[in-house]
Image (tube, rainbow, N blue to C red; front, side):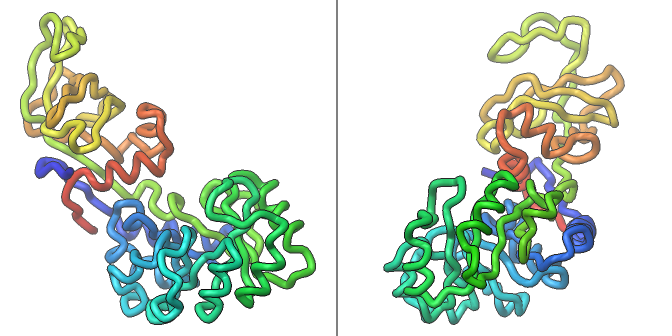
Length: 309
C-alpha cells in the first residue's frame, strides 16, 4: 500500500537519456519493456516518453496494453513475453499486440495474430522445447522467435536452434546489452531504461538522541541520534541504506507503518530521508534487501504518490 508521506519523483528526461544511450550503444531496434506498469513507474506516462526511441513495447500480458490503450497512446505495437491469456486472435489484432506462443495449440489458434515463438534456452517456463520448434513454427506461420536469456550462451543457443529458418531473433534484456553477440536483431531493455530515474523520499517525523535499547527489537545506538519516518513494511520498506542531508545513514528497524533511521546530530524533523536516489542506487537497495534491482525498483516506485518532472 502507498504511504501519503512518501514522494516518488520520476525524471522523464532521464528515461529519455537512458533510452537514447541504449539505442546508440546497441545499434539495433529496441522493444522497450513496460510490463508491470513500467516497473511501477506508470506505463501510461512512460510509454509516450519511450515511443520515439523504440520499435515497440514488451509487456507480459495482453491486458496490460488494453488497460492503457497502448496503441492509441503511442501508435507503436507491442509483443507479450508471458503466456497468452486468450486464444481469440481478434483481441490481439485490435490491440496491435502480438502473442508469444510455446505450444502447437497456441500457435494454431493464434496464427492470424502473427505470433512470436518463445524458445526455451534457460528459463524452463512459458517456452517450447527444441524438439517442437518446427511444428510450432509451421502451425503458427511464425517468422520471429525469442528467448529469455541470462547469459550470452543462451543467445548462441537460440541461434543454433533456429539456424537456417530465416527468423528474426532477440534475446538480450538489460543484463546482456553490453554483449554484442547477444543483441541479434533487437534488444528488450527494461531496468536499463529506468535506472537512476526515480527518487523516493520521506520526511523525518521526529528526531531524538539515542539512549538505551530502541524499538521492538531493542537495537542500540548509544551516544548517537536517530529518528522516525512514517513508512513501514506495509508500504514495502525494509532495513537498508538511506541518505539524510547528504550523509549516508541506515534504516535499522521497520514497523508496520513507521521505521527508525540513524541520524547526524544536525538532522531535524522535516528533513528528507532519501530512500532511493541521491547516492542510493537500485543496486544498493537490492543488495541490502537480498532481491534483484528490478524488485527493489518496483517496490520503491509504488511506495507513494507519483510526481513526474
